[in-house]
Length: 125
Image 1 (cartoon, one colour):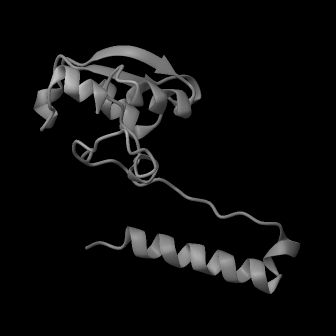
Image 2 (spheres, rainbow, N blue to C red; image 1 turned 135 degrees about the vertical axis):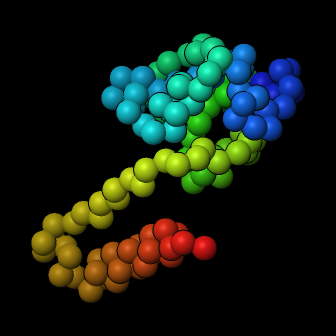
Image 3 (tube, rainbow, N blue to C red; image 1 turned 60 degrees about the vertical axis):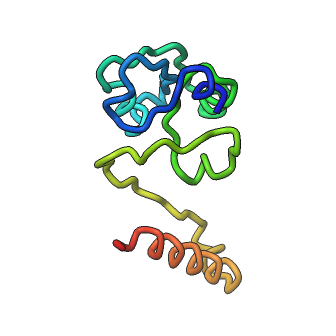
């Protein structure tokens, strides 16, 4: 919100040109939303980090625009949603437990609930 107050609104992808961006680096450089943002014409990278919390903090402090997942941004009221990043490939999600733990009724119930929630979230509207 601070960055947008100082530099004006960004209402479309084409309006990104000339704006400062913070981008994932190192092992995070492959994140699709970060790669997409860094590839947009005319953006100006001002901060690169391999720490996702550092990227979010840079965005919150007004250093530039940052592309984050909706679930992360929902926990950050200082961030303002601009628009969804188009055509990102789906990500694999793994739910892992030991064989012994997965046989416990409580663990199985939680695993089933989580799987159902992901199925609901990825169902086409």
